[in-house]
Image (tube, rainbow, N blue to C red; front, side, top):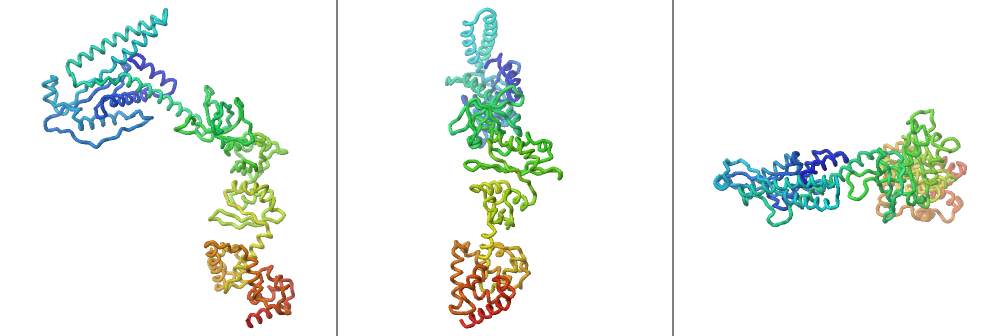
Length: 599
């Protein structure tokens, strides 16, 4: 750093890196201020100003003239404000306020008015300030002269003549600086700030200037990368540069101006498992994240797994997506042993089939995308704003019989025909997992027969409670559409208006008792069939021509095992349930009632 190339250096850096000269000058001022405080003391009131005429930083020790009645004001200690990588960056107004605080707080920044007049011949008044220069340039100029002389020995001709001119200018500047040092020393003596301990303030100042310039360059490069790549969602063609420990890959991609290449990180978790990576190979990916400030080495994080990667591939292959007619609403993808992709699409125009547009003639469009992502099969489904329709579409090719929806928990129980169960679940759960990821709903798949068995089990559990009439329970479930204990426990009697209020209250009370048992850790379903079967059979007579064991088995299979359930049923209902005539049903009910009365 010298008086002849600092202006030139600032201009060059500002032009190449796009940093304003004012910001560079302010950063250098703050760097020099910090260096001065490091050598002369943190409480010294020092101001730092860039002198554009000479192209150097001038430092002054600010001293306040005080009188007898002005004692130093004790301020609370203020920690240094470390900013911009530790370069003590304060705005000019902040520095001025700091000067006022230090001159009012510490005697080392004060001079009594009588001493100023008597010893230093200063015609000053109380409250005024003097600014004494911190003379450090001689050390820097001497170091630069030595460096130029060493360089001169290896030069010849015009280059040596140019160095000679620089040497003469530096020698003249050094003489001027030494004369100034002598002049101020003779007049102000020990009032001047000097590096008496020989800590090399000139060297520290030069190093501080170098550090701040480097940091500003790095910051400008970070800002430029952020501005150029933030929000950029295009497919990037990158080249593999090197492999990092842990499996991460460093790649190079071209900046938008194509003048330089920027390194980015492809983390291991964002790579394709089936992809073969090697040095120099060109691969396609998208920018996942652009960091404003990066503690690590890389600001750009790229990915081959991010959903934007598949979206952009479809955009390149499907004109309807490119022109905005068809929109991709979501992407779900599985990796590992079970791989697959589901894409939800929607059309803004009713005449355009979104799924068909993405698949293309003979599947050509979707096949191009599959080839780019390593061969994983892609299923395209139609998106719907209605959650139940979206879930049904997402579970294709399986057909859905009905859904039990818990909106609060975002959970659906999906009932499918027995023949469709394997399709709905998919190989190792692939289909249902992808559908759940795509829709954002938790999905449980049940076969029709299993759900009917569970519903019969639920009815059986509830019917076992006192006051619950089986006929009313079935009617309430049928009319309300409620099928689970959880649903029945969460309603009011008014919602079960198809049965008498007393019966509705009994059903809800029974459901809530079962929920309480479950919440206490009891598996209310585990073994309930066998337990209830034994309990129901215990209520039947052991020798009866009407209430036989064969009849019990038929009744138990449909949830009519307990005799009190049969006794509270009408002949019409029982006849339809077990396949007998109404007179036969009447006889069975009468026998059940008679046996209950005898017990």
